Image 1 (cartoon, helix red, strand yellow):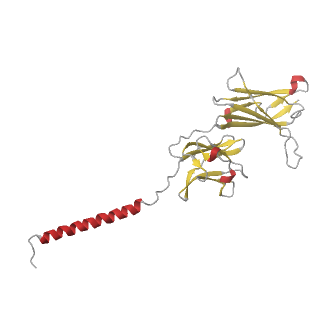
Image 2 (cartoon, one colour):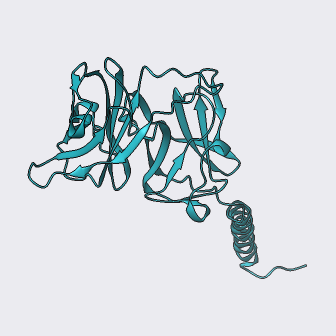
Image 3 (cartoon, rainbow, N blue to C red):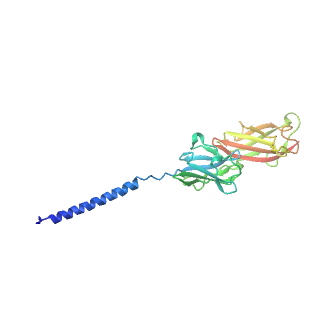
Length: 271
């Protein structure tokens, strides 16, 4: 069979075009397979700090992504290693832990370590591990959280109580001599409430549950003359104790986010 001049060149061009077309099709198929797969879940980020709410561990959401039910876990080490204690915490309002929300620990034991994780894509990532310092202020922000400024928590020394540690409380048995004016100086401008709790430290706890029956708790009144002072007058004689008894006196200061500081002293009644 006779060939027309140039047929060989046309065949080569068609072969190259077919090869390019097959290559492009293969790339398109691979890209479609890769891109059609599920995208990895985005890991939430949140700033979690720990505080002391009436003697109980409280975790506060201070910024970042909201966390719904099942999107976070809280692990507590109460001396036997970390264990999932999410169900031992109070539930957030509306089922979503968002900025300003607080979870309070209602479980057994005293927490020594707390770890908050984010649950995403079938796995867990550590979200925060607030550092427990002990004492009244209790906890501090997670020092390892990137982009978070570590603001020192208030220390017990910010509250000055009258009477002081080991001081005597002079009382009598008649009229106003039975009363004592408790005072607290708290040099903070964000205080919204101050509570006074007094009980007889020497009271015998003879009941099976060792209940202390002499507990008196009151809200203190802000002094209108002296800045940063709070006062409460209580009748001591016959109500709380007698001469030579020791009184446990606790002052708890609150701001809009919860407990900001507290202090406890022991003082002796002198009749």
